[in-house]
Image (cartoon, rainbow, N blue to C red; front, side, top):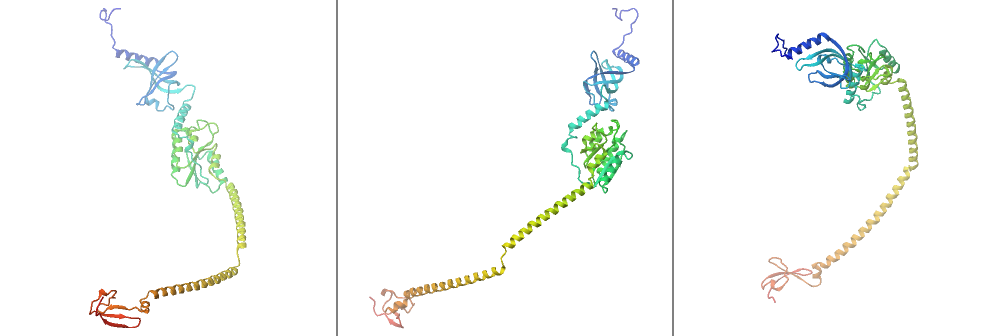
Length: 404
């Protein structure tokens, strides 16, 4: 093969950039917008918000990118193995020279995009515990006021009001009108929940609508609506009028009612039931009072049989006092006799020890006149000392002449 340098006529030499630019221009001109079906693999959500993946079938694959501006409105999150149909354009990524599919729109093949988005959202909120039974709250038995969120022109509000008036005419209903389908309906429901939660008299909220198609009910599958229901200050009853499908609002609510009528029956007590309960309670109370009165009468009769005549008691006490007085007198006399005997014996013992008794037997007591001390021995005095000698009768003054 001759080289361009040795050829007689000059041969144009393209740069790599020129070649990729021509390929890109040719592809974009020849193909324009295309629809391609295939299976997603190597899916990666970049931090910039762009989706990068490969679209493949049994024999081929092609790199694909879906920029953030295009995937923001995607109702579901793509994942590996998902069979999809994409709309986009074929081009060349000049930096690497790669053939690439630029995706502008995507929808699952075999399952609706909204259904897939709902399933993914349900799985995520379930993992968060938003639908856990442990966070469900009991409904108040007799609420001061009931909040109602629904459309004014629908059958739901008529059913709730009619049922509430039939069961409890005095029940206060505070209605917050919203759209229950269409664009912006979810935002209105969220705002209504916030408004009613701001009213302290409201103790329970009913939110819902009458029956309809899956598309009509879709507002109650929005994430913001489910989170607002779960975050309500007071218990919420979901009253979306459908039997087969379960919306996210149903799962997030504290109680689910099949219809608005059923919801009203849950939150509004029936005055007839209350009257019957009061009658039963009154009958039970009357029976209990009669039984208690009968028991007290029997106790009073038993006490009456045990009660003695107070005059008999007084007479017995008088006899007891007389007996005690007589016993006390005898005891006092015995004590006096014993005391006298003890006193007599003590006097006799004291008399025996008295110095006068000694003098009675012929002895005398000698005291020195100078200091009055008793002289017990001869060596205690000297000749010339004057003594006072005491006899049984009288005293003599003497002078010592001699001691021996």
